[in-house]
Length: 257
Length: 372
Ligand SMILES: Nc1ncnc2c1ncn2[C@@H]1O[C@H](COP(=O)(O)OP(=O)(O)OP(=O)(O)O)[C@@H](O)[C@H]1O
Ligand SMILES: [Mg+2]
Image (cartoon, rainbow over all chains, first blue to last red; front, side):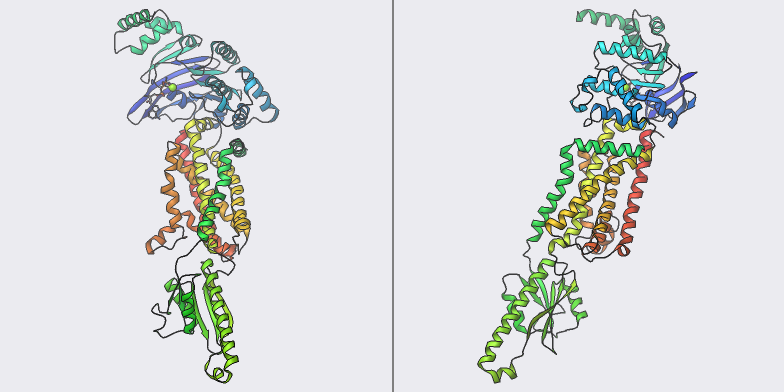
């Protein structure tokens, strides 16, 4: 079954065409990465999948149900690009509020809170107000709120920004565990070693899908050495012959060293 | 269930935010207290209409330095050159026509001096009443002395004026002072102002910080968000209203002629109006500062249009368009005139109607935010 199916989705903001004719199929229980340069439309696509934006045309199905749907919203966890939390509430109060919005109560709520708290490593700070959190702590709590109700579909917009490598590693382990349990995960990222951890990827630019496939496939398609070069190749393709661009990139790297 | 969750969250937030709490609960009291101080001190000239009354009263009234008085005849002209009336209706009309504070006349039969007072400016009314009473008593004492000295003459020529003054309030009553008059309107304005701003800014923050989006991504219905907010801030408004009303009554000494519960009810409805409007307008603002810009556009015009000040023709009609007009009308009816629900149900319904319109508009606006 498809976890998420995106069919011919287009979206424009006024004159600005943010997405044109996007079609993607994400099997249930897989991790799907959206990559692409800043402004290419990743967040826009993710918001449409969450039902926060309405596409101009095309349709989205999640777990076989067409959006918009409240019952799907209940099964979806969303982590926005910027940590959206209540600064004058404690971490626990934030988690408890969002948990209740998804219908959790009592013991179940308490258990979920302690589970996601330890998952993101916030046990010691969960009872202080988030205005006193560091950027990374906010990000971790934000991830925890997306996981609080044990969603079947998880949509994460650049979730690991500002999180240290050790914790990032743990979080990715958890994401893989979740995927194994059947959770469908849609994730956007700029970090290429993270992109490599996804089961498959879509490379977006200017609101269009340039290529899809595993990271190896993308590297091969771009004729690049590694995923970072593939990213640059796709990101600058069409404006310059990418071989020339790659040469320049290598030169710059050399200069930096 | 979700409505309650949302209301409880707003409560927790406010509980943690001491400063906002203090602003919401104490600032209205501070403002009310200051306004009371300012309004209680009043030394402008008041007008008094002289009906058929002996001229010595007019002379004595002019000499008073307790209060500055302008004395006129019932038709608005000079008091000693005109035909004089004594009928209550005529004097009442003269008070209305000339925005006078009082009218004075004497019944021929028993020489009893009668003072009609417009108690809606209660401070002035009380002063006039006191001053006139004093003049009459002094005059009576003097006549008494003269009577002792030259008994036969005075018996025939001197009119024997009854020294006791008959005071009739046309509007209001004697126990008020000037603050009562504005106090009623002020309570409504203050409740409106603070709740409008607080709810508006709170919702705006939610919009800017992305937490609104996060809520909208959850399986909450749009009306649940609006109702949750309304419930949360209504409870806060209830506490604020209680504090403001009790402060006005027990500390400042505002006299409520009608039922305190009706005052609460009107204020609560006003608060709901204010908070739903605040939430609605917050969608037009991009920052707290822009939210503040609504104060001169939304709040201050209402202060002028609500009926606290006398307005000329067209503006009076414009008043009917603003919620505070109905708040003010209802509060004045209950506080000053002691009227009950049967007299103010129209205002109550209109306030409810405003709230329902704002709530519906909010639910629709959120559709834009969510995409569906
Ligand atoms: N609400 C909006 N109104 C107008 N234009 C918008 C709006 N949201 C996004 N856009 C435009 O759509 C394009 C795609 O934006 P989007 O946020 O999806 O990019 P992104 O891929 O997430 O970028 P980043 O990697 O920097 O987060 C941008 O050009 C942006 O300016
Ligand atoms: Mg983005």
